[in-house]
Image (tube, rainbow, N blue to C red; front, side):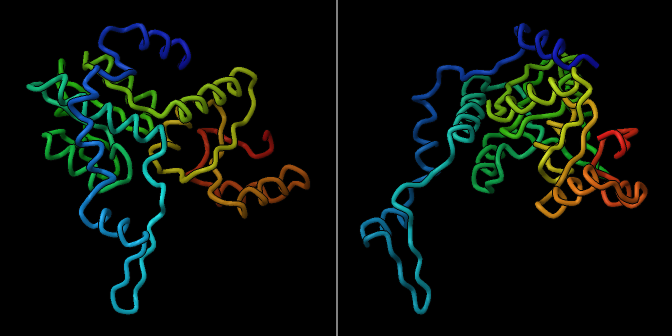
Length: 240
């Protein structure tokens, strides 16, 4: 699949939204509440320290979501403001924050269920609104939703999509993309869907193992067994 051409086509669709809807004022209170509470205010007024028995809690003077996460959450909240009566779905947790995800559920945003390890999009109908989370979504999911004539609200962090551009360049030049992450995590799944040949490494030890194999060779079958679920179809370590 020409993922670059698909992205260009999707970006030009009137059913695809990559920016907010101009409802910043309406959701500002909700956004502030993610950082504020009576407890937070109390700790601040207590020189950012709270002691209860033998437990001491220290609050950072500056804290909050990173820019990409704040943007994604605000866009998700704005989506309900902009589409007050439409059915709205989200393909994954918007971010890994239980309070934020619960707030979306309270807004009647449905989360795509997972059956036997696979997402079940059968309840998503033409005309529904579907939010892509900050981690992104695989190109296959985006194609499915586009073919279904859904309205897509893409909150993918721009720093994540920047990585997609890089792996697409690797694919064009027949390079192997080494992706750092958990092979089942939605951000890794999304990134690998834009790659050609790829390998996912979880930590420094796995990265060192791969580097040693590249430099010194090794047991091909052991390599494939170690990364059995973390590489592209037909991957051969000899060709890294």
